[in-house]
Amino acid sequence: MIPVVKPFLPPIDEYQSLIAGIWERQWLTNMGPLAVKLEEKLQSRLAVSNLLFVTNGTIALQMAIKALGLKGEIITTPFSFVATTSTIVWEGCTPVFVDIEKDSLTIDSTKIEQAITKDTVAILATHVYGNPCDIEAIDAIAKKNNLKVIYDGAHAFGVKYKGKSIFEYGDISTCSLHATKLYHSTEGGFIVTNDKELNTRLKHIRNFGIAGFDKFSDLGINGKNSEMHAAMGIANLKYIDSIIEKRKKLYDAYTKGLASFPAVQPCWRAGATMNFPYYPIVLESEELLLAVREALLKDDIHVRRYFYPSLASALPYLPKQEFVVTEDIAKRVICLPFYYDLTEEEVERICGIMNRIN
Ligand SMILES: *Cc1c(COP(=O)(O)O)cnc(C)c1O
Image (tube, rainbow, N blue to C red; front, top):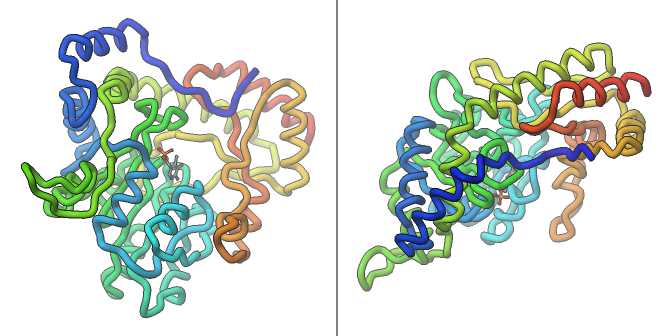
């Protein structure tokens, strides 16, 4: 079986030796030494100002919305994972969708201003498949209209834009460290902000709003993560360069193997480094996509329609809306199997099957 994703696992003895330390200290959670160490390592690896390790990427988004005190309409993308939208609704705000750019698949900044009303408070956009949004345009619109900006960087681990970590842009950026992501801590996530005060507030929010002995500062939640998860994050971090290097090889193998296949890749933003979290392609038609899925499935090879359907048309708790580019792309995009253990031979086999259909 070839799944669409498979988590990377570090050598078990390296994980076990970190776990042995937890047994010695008997400190399992609540900002333990491994969680603090992971934060320090990530902060220095990514070169970001303030980073908080949290439960998961979803809680990270909820905490971001809460910490910025957002109430009202939040402009967002219909082409993302459901958590980008559901967290807005969960926090009592209203998502207002704006269509995406057909090349980058990120939110179309030229359509944001017409969606702004007197109730708009923020923009929450996703760096889709790690590809940065049109950051300068979004920043300019936000400044002009006095809006906050949150970036869902769940796919964007390690990406740099114009020489700076992608997580340094916007008021707050979030990342997911879920097992299926490029880099993971089993479950987990982090929040980055370069605003010191905001970081302190987020710290309190992560810990039930507790701001010290006998003192509460904010409405909080339990956004902490455990020592076991931090151990996985630390063990995996050592391998991140070889993980990305291997993924680049697989990426090149796919691109070569599919050179004459009628599909295109999302266009990567100029000025951004690539991190190879997925291998997405936009096929010529939905018909071809379904044929590809069926042919691969016969060989027990699994692809995923990631992201389909559009968040603007599929969520039972929101009115249905259709956006021309999003509807069209969502019908034609798939992610092919892509993970560290995948071999170049397997990629060739997958490309072979696809090329025979065409
Ligand atoms: C995975 C993902 C999330 C949610 O992260 P979890 O850690 O699974 O909660 C949010 N947004 C996007 C774009 C994602 O891909």
